[in-house]
Image 1 (tube, rainbow, N blue to C red):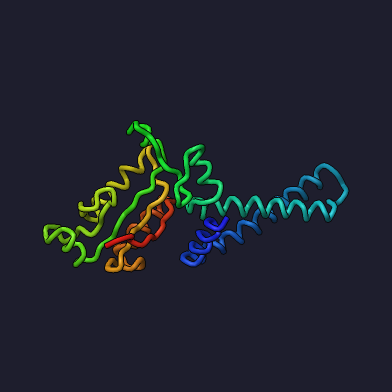
Image 2 (cartoon, rainbow, N blue to C red; image 1 turned 90 degrees about the vertical axis):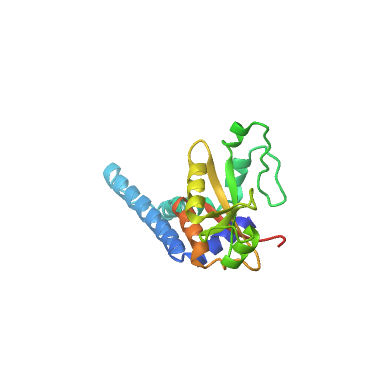
Length: 209
């Protein structure tokens, strides 16, 4: 319950238009269902619709409209029953995410993936590559921590992993003490791509330099 609420609050602070859209969805759902019921009552009977039934329909319509808008705007943030459905009977890790266990590489492609990406400053990129990296290589896929790649190559790799039958469920951006702030353009290019694909984003500290 805490994880979805935290994700909702984080997304609301980053995108204040989302909670406004949620309120609009609730109001629209309540209005549409109530007016539809009034229309049907007028066609089927001459009696006015009871007030308690109108309140009930508005509540149901508001809840339905709000739920639809919530799933459209916040459904990709993970947590709650969504992750439980994805996990199935898989064992859960310490971070409440399903642990992928498979000896068949083709079976792993069917599992929604969590991709870990580290973003580097220019000095840190030169330090890790010992001066051998290209000027535009500021990203690391944590599965290959010594392989620095450019933003263009990173996005190509993410696009390739997003194609069926595989699917990215979450991107975890790893930031060390000497790495760029999460609000810098170098990091925002990843978050912009993920938001366009409705993929959840987490920011995690680097465990060790």
